[in-house]
Length: 222
Ligand SMILES: Cc1cc2nc3c(=O)[nH]c(=O)nc-3n(C[C@H](O)[C@H](O)[C@H](O)COP(=O)(O)OP(=O)(O)OC[C@H]3O[C@@H](n4cnc5c(N)ncnc54)[C@H](O)[C@@H]3O)c2cc1C
Image 1 (cartoon, rainbow, N blue to C red):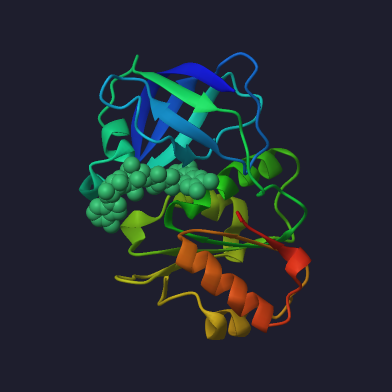
Image 2 (tube, rainbow, N blue to C red):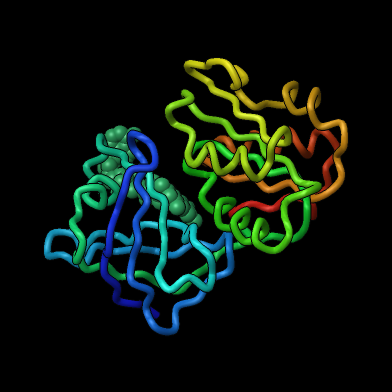
């Protein structure tokens, strides 16, 4: 099923990520963490393959929010999305996907892979908080961290931000890999939520399995 919608506004979140607010189509619903597929309903773009994105707002908001990173060098859908004006016509599918909140645990994200977790964190923050959970968030540089203030507000000391290219005070340095996780995951109970580029998800899942985490504790998009 497809829903027609319209862009209401967009604003910068980081230098290459924007928050998009869309009209909420009648009958559209989602579970925090799920994705949709989106098409720009303009002559040049409507036959382009739909691209997946994740609603990042609350499930009962009267509008839909997306948080989308632009890949200008691809000249694709995200590049065009970042140039759209309010009123632009869009189409989205029903929500799908395996990521949803199952209980407290460890959230491991890289880059725009934070988006399904943003929806989950916002819902959990409203429903009593995120105690018992922690966040490891990897980015290239501090300037790339999406919604950093909000995430620090939710997690306090339980959030660790690491940068792989350029780091700075308040950020770890290097990649999140098995030695990094072995050092920091003293408590290995709860769920392990993983989202990011395919290679990140593969490597983190492999590291967690090597560390004895059971497959049923891993939550990620298959
Ligand atoms: C379930 C799911 C949910 C997602 N949710 C979000 C979200 O909420 N927010 C978000 O920001 N992202 C999200 N993503 C990622 C998002 O779908 C992609 O970033 C998006 O599809 C990229 O679309 P694009 O058309 O701009 O680029 P692409 O489709 O990657 O590329 C367009 C064209 O550019 C060329 N190209 C591809 N790679 C390169 C390259 N490295 N260099 C040069 N040219 C290249 C190819 O010819 C390609 O056809 C999600 C992904 C999934 C699977």
